[in-house]
Length: 464
Length: 140
Image (spheres, chains in turn orange, brown):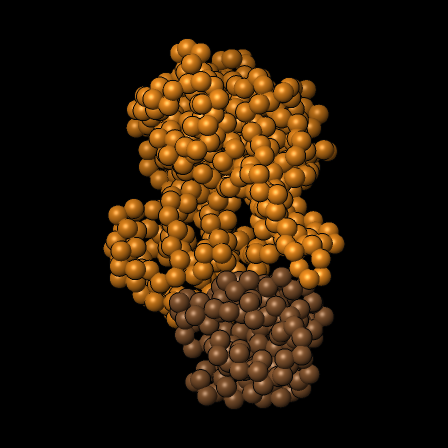
C-alpha cells in the first residue's frame, strides 16, 4: 500500500516554498521540494507553480491534501495598549507575539493626542487594547475607549482589559471593527493570553486570506491557511511537549527584517533563596525584534547594537566606515548575498549581533540582593539557563555549518557580578538545514507528533 | 457592589512572609479584594498593582528595620503616577532600635502615610480605620 502523501506550502514575502511528504511510521518522509519567487500580485500563480513542481518531482498526482501557511502580507501589525508598562502592557505584548503578530508600537496609560495621531498614521492591523484587572481600573480604560472611538483609526480593535467595563468600552467603540476577549490580566500577576490570542488568530486568518488571490487558493485546497509565525509557534510547543530530550529548547528564526526567539522551558524553577519578581512568564514564549535583521533591518541593527558591533570590528581590525558602507548597501538591496570574505565577515558579525541581542531581550535576569537575613537572589523574566538545545533557522542560520552564530545566544554579558542575564549555559546547536520548520509546522495542527518528529529529524547538529 | 481593592506587600529587601499571609487572610475575610504582592516588593510594583486594580489603599509592611529608607518617596511617586487620592498605610518594625512610637509615627506621617502602626496592633482596629478613611476619601 502506498503511504498517504501530503503537500505543505508556505507563501513567504519573497519565496513560495513547498514540500511533498509521505506519512510513514509516525513521521513524514520528504519526497520532493519546490521553490519559486512569490507572485506578489496573484499569490495563486506561484502556489500553482510550486504544486506542479512537487507533483512532477515525485511522479505522484496533484491530488493530495495541501496544507498552507502564508506571511506574504508582511505579517500582522499590532499596536499594544496597556495601563502600566510592567503589567498589562507587558502581557499584551506577550499575547501579540504568541499569536504570531509583530508589535509595531506600545502605549501605556491614557493616550495623548500625539499618540492618537501616531496611531492613525501608523495604521496597524490590530489595536490590542488592555488595561485594568477585572473590577480594577476603569477611568483610564474608559477614557482610552472614548479616544479610540473618536479617532480615525481603521484598525481592528480587540478589547481584552477590565471585564467589568467591557460593555461600556464596546459601546464607545461601536463605530469601529471591534471584538472582545477575556482580560489578559484578570488579577495582578495572572497571565491569561489564550482568549485574546484566539481572536487575533482569527483576525490574522481573515486578513491573509483577503485579496491577492489567496482566497481562490483556499477554496481550491478546502482548508484554512495558517499565518506562518503562528504555525511555527505551535510547532515549537509540540516539539517541546512530545519529543524526548527536547523539553527545554530554544529556537532563533533570523531573517532580513526580524529576529524571532522562541523558548520552551519552565520560566522559573525557584530554589530556597531565589525569589521571582514581576510576571511569571509562560512555558512557551516568543519574542520578535523588529530592529534586528540582516537586510531590511540592517540599519536599525547597526543603530541598536553599535557598541557591540564596534568593539567586534576593532577586534577584527576592520574599519567602521567599511562596515557602515556595507550596511547601507545591503539595506538598499535586501536580496544581496556577500561576495567576498570581508562581506562574509560583516554578515557573520551582523548575525552574531542579532542573535545575541535577541537572546538578551528574551531572557530574564538574576540579581543578588543583600538583606539583613542574608543574601538572596531576585529573578525577573524567564530563565533560559536550562535550555539544552538551540535551533537556528531562517536563511543565514539554516545555512550555517558552525555552532558559533547560534551559540552567541549564550555569550556572557556584563562584568557586573551582582546581576547576570539568564542565558543558556551550554546547549547543543542545531541548524534547520533543509529549512523544513515552516513546512512541517503547517502539518502540526492535524499531525502534532509526526510533524514535531519530522522537524527534529531534519535538523543538523553543529560543532563549535 | 464591587469589593474595595487593597494592595498589600512587604517593602524593600525584606523577606518576612508570615505576617504578610496573616494580613492577606484577615483583610480578605473582612470583605476587601486583596492583591497580595508578597515579600521584597519595590515601590513601583506597589504602584503598578494599585493602578491596575484601582486600589483604595496600599498597605505596606516592613519588619526588618529599614522601613524608613524603603518608604521614602512613595507618596510623591504615587502622585506622579496619577494615584493622587490613594491611602497609604504602613506598619511593622519600622525602625531599628528603641525609638519611641510617637517619633516613628511622626516620621512616617511626614513622609505622606495616612496611618502608621507598630508591631502590636489590633487588626480589627485597622479595618475600622481603613473603612472610615476610605469613606472619608469618597471612595466606594
